[in-house]
Image (cartoon, rainbow, N blue to C red; front, side, top):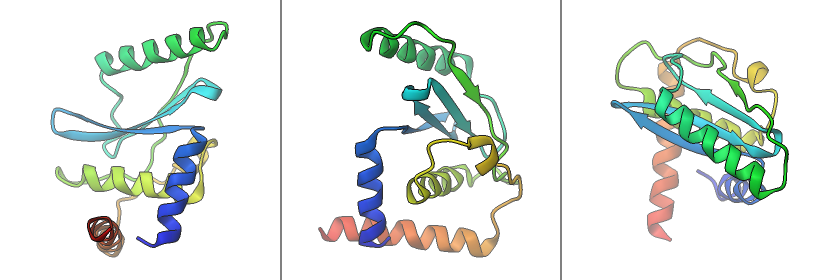
Length: 145
């Protein structure tokens, strides 16, 4: 990953419009996107599954506490489940989470989730190769300092 992309990741995290929360339940990775400023939770799952009920209650509690801490009236949290890229095997879910994280951070996506993540096609072999290459390069650069 290039230094410019790393800077974009840091800038995005500092803005804290949304926080990205990779979540593994039963060996399957999903990406939970917390957007407290707009009281929205987005769940991206490469198998198009809903979030398990325990995690959903935890996230709802976090939003309630955040609203109380910020003096906001309690509003119902909006839960979005876009039908993004879909995996057709049982072992690539982590790559799909990394792809979604990369797309969100590099494009600075903080809204229009249903429109942005509406392509249910599988990642191609070339896209998977590029994704693995970008992430491995990024991690190697972190190790080198």
